[in-house]
Image (cartoon, rainbow, N blue to C red):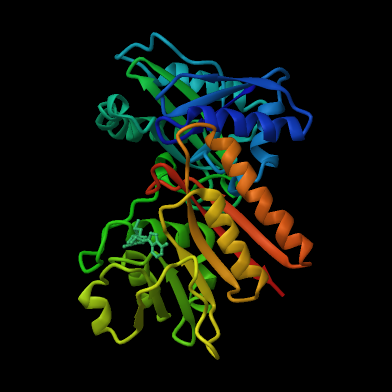
Length: 363
Ligand SMILES: C[S@@+](CC[C@H](N)C(=O)[O-])C[C@H]1O[C@@H](n2cnc3c(N)ncnc32)[C@H](O)[C@@H]1O
């Protein structure tokens, strides 16, 4: 098994390819990315055996921006017979079991790319999961309890009903979600659908066990570009008092909570109200990414907030280069100020032509 498959939103295959090639090269591992436009995934083939496995363990999954999932796979299995797709899959895993102990696997996911064509396969994938799981259990695999932090998840990635990749991911270095997509339910009382972006960002960047410490009713936040209030809603829901900055109108339901103050101002000029301590800054203004990066940097360097989640809207071209440049700018400037910080960025499922960034200043 010397290949990786990285899942992504359709149209972002080139960004994934550039990112994985960079991350592999940083570790002295070389290979080539096979990119098919709008496939919803990228195959990265390493020149040496064992190196795909090394990358799947060593590249921290949370440092990959554009990949939704990272799995190690063998060669594509083709011409699978509708009468028996299971035997060739088991045969592949038997080979794999010589190097990777499948006893440690906890779960099997039968997946496809997130494209309209591939979605037609999803009913088949669901049906196929049960017999496949039984066959894997008969081999003595899938021993660990589901959701275990250590161990492996087995992935079968179908690209057609008669062709699939067979592989695995490391539970401590992958997306815990089926197809790498967190399934969130739109809260009907939220003022806009973009509320799901901030909800997914919080789920992705803030460990569950820390959520009530990192967001609570002793805190204040600022939401730049807040209207109609989907992001503010997420903060208020977690107890945070919000200064909502936007010339537009905020949803009445948010005013009724008594937990917001609407500031009809320019987000680039707004400063935290005197004598108020701001814990959180969030920002969803549609602007050039470099302008947003500079604005966020100003807030952090001035000590106006300790933690921030914001979007960088991506340009049409050179999206990966632009993202690298903005993140580098932020890192360089925060370092120059001697700040100890953590930075994470992700192309979330609910993001379209944008990525979401989280920065936390640590003591
Ligand atoms: C994508 S919408 C925000 C949606 C919001 N996050 C939500 O969940 O409902 C972008 C908002 O940014 C605001 N905006 C754009 N430029 C701004 C600026 N310079 N100052 C304040 N608000 C701005 C727009 O008025 C718009 O309401």
